[in-house]
Image 1 (cartoon, rainbow, N blue to C red):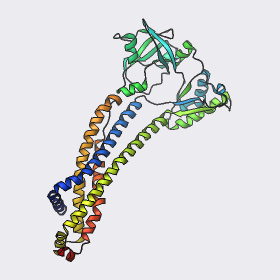
Image 2: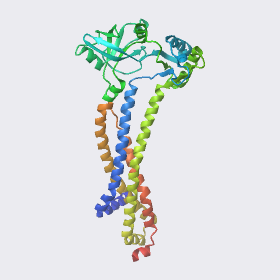
Image 3: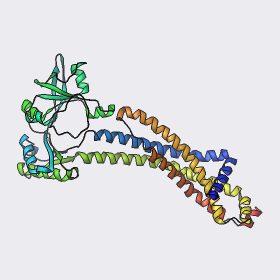
Image 4: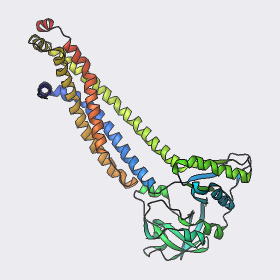
Length: 397
């Protein structure tokens, strides 16, 4: 350990003697490290915010809908009774099966009237969404086709102002429904925009009150998330048995969509980090160049060291240590700048995406690993060249 510390002290002294040149050499390392850390840190923080918010919606269903490109779409049209057929056929493999419509109806309370998105709920909840007022729709509401609804907080403010919405009544397409709950805002304005505004009714109430016609899709919640694709295919077989083999359906796995989205974000982050990696390669070449200059300038010093008994490994270690110290200092400063940029960007993004998690330990590990690797890779050739110098020729120079 003392042996390495002595080389570390010599390396620091050598770099300090040429501190302006060393600082200019480290500039490339600083820029490269800062860009990689900033891109990686911001992308990971943003991904954590987006995936965390999506996770709050709970288990995503498998969507089964008619294929719009088929020759006879009317043959594949989904009917309300198809839900019972799929539910019976799947049995325990499905935790819940719901009809699904998305319609825009007039919503009114007193003098406030407007057209809003109206959706369905079946009482099966795996989400962690918080209610600012009241409760969510439950199985009892669905079983009795109760004329109740829940709504988003922006609509509650729009139709009821400062008066609590829960317990009051709202007219949806002329049907009087009691508001039993109001969803709280999701953290992050982007996610609130993504989730959208709307009024939600039990699907049985929606069907009985509005006669909405054919279903837009059928939602199947697999009992085992790992069987989502198999359950989707099984649902299609049931529908083709009912509607005929020529009826074509498309299946979209909600969980698969999230995984694909997460993978896309990781690919983008990796691509942007690779661009920053180019700056690191340039910085490494700069370190190699300055070390070769250093070897040339210190040829007589190398000859003296060899003459008094220094081995090739001693010379290699001496110059390699200088390259690593140069790389580590530049990488450390770059890491600091990258962290500052990450923290600043995360504080701004949190207003749009909600709470973000910055992987500090991973960032520090990556910065140190890259810094040491660049120093070792680009410092090896100059160190070997110094070690291979003939001591007599070196002393003559």
